[in-house]
Image 1 (spheres, rainbow, N blue to C red):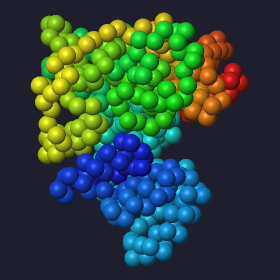
Image 2 (cartoon, one colour):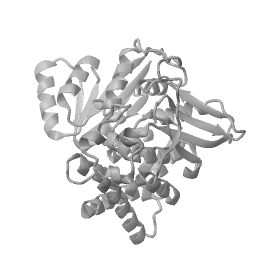
Image 3 (cartoon, rainbow, N blue to C red):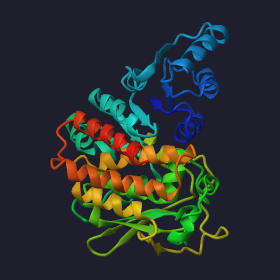
Image 4 (cartoon, rainbow, N blue to C red):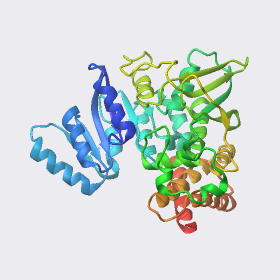
Length: 391
């Protein structure tokens, strides 16, 4: 049996992780849960899985949660952490074998580092942890000898394709992308994009921030940077392949020219299960993949047009420069996407803001090296300040 804790348990990945637990026949046990402020769903999760430690970041929501537990679950033996310290408390609790890191944004970085420091394996669904913090996360992973197991469908696919391959045999990584809701759009057509259109993803059901990133192709930019850290590959050896059917989750090309692909339905529970059961395979409770099902025999591949989706090219630039620039890019993007979700800026203003922040930061900060977590957090803070200024 593996004991797990989940950071971001009320989000898309968190709720699907709990679905995997439900079908694990007792092989997976939830010891810790953490969320932001969704009290109603969080309370139901606590009632069902009886974790010994929970955390909730929003202080007002925490008061509501404590009152409900006291009144409705008075006999429950549970520790409750609140505020900014809650995620790390859940991530580092005794008895946990693996932490599912599914918090969205840079806020997920510190609890992941704390968990690694305590020797916990990480099932990583938070891209920003490696995008912004890869230069401190990966050395600590190696030092502590823990496993960093990718949960993103693309990175899980790459990881699975690499199983058993001789060291040094990887030539290129081919990350697939559905193309999002604006596949085939011109730059002029993007000027009229509304929030409703941007949130209407044709394949995946995700949270608001991730869905917008997918529509702008920043999601793929983040995945390129994450893959570079995970697999020790330069960003110029990673390509984005638009594959609207979302059947092939990613591919690798080996040095002899062989191409390996991982296929499956567009369902995040499979990569979650692969990570949680590693190094063996799980029970596979989902409907099995059928290559003869309607639409699955007709697969298409296209290039991504970076003249339309300029954020992808900005991500490549950040990956080439390295240092704190990926953290700057990520911080500016988080601020801009939040502003778009709240109706404060237009769709193309997201890219304009990120580009402006990166340009100014590079001009005014000649030393972009990362020496510590503080360097990353300071760069993120400055990026957010600049983004607010430009908007």
